[in-house]
Image 1: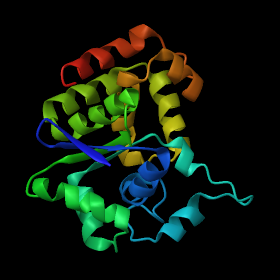
Image 2: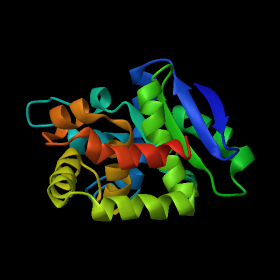
Image 3: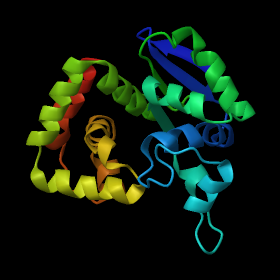
Image 4: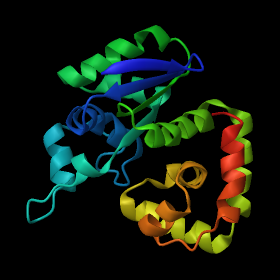
Length: 205
């Protein structure tokens, strides 16, 4: 795990592979935004996380489908205080100590994954920059209602909690492109639809 700092309060962790990324980030991320209250905001073991996501046939896609993670400091610090940390999670704790006396945002992806990095940076600025957050909320409120409804449904199917839906809509619209949004969410989205989100993101990225 390598660390890079953006804007003095965004901690970006770069991992060498998918295994290290997901095994390090899975519990704090699900503590933050799991759609189920069985995990979100609760203290749980790694076994309980696996039991929640594995299907009856033993298939477990969680550790292969998520390429990026993002967690605000208030949640991550709560996680550190409540959980018995694994060795990987202890490393997260150690790298965040110099920033723990003020609000920060923690993001993670595999090294050299620039597309995911942009997506996670948008989340960070949404949390840390109130002017950007307010402008993004207005864009989501006034976007085409059919797109907002379908994207909301798609995000919930992916497992996102209600509390992060607006944040996620903004991040996907700002960084994903029309082809991805169509293939991933079957959205009938145009460049005109995403341009306001892309232009807004350029003010912070």
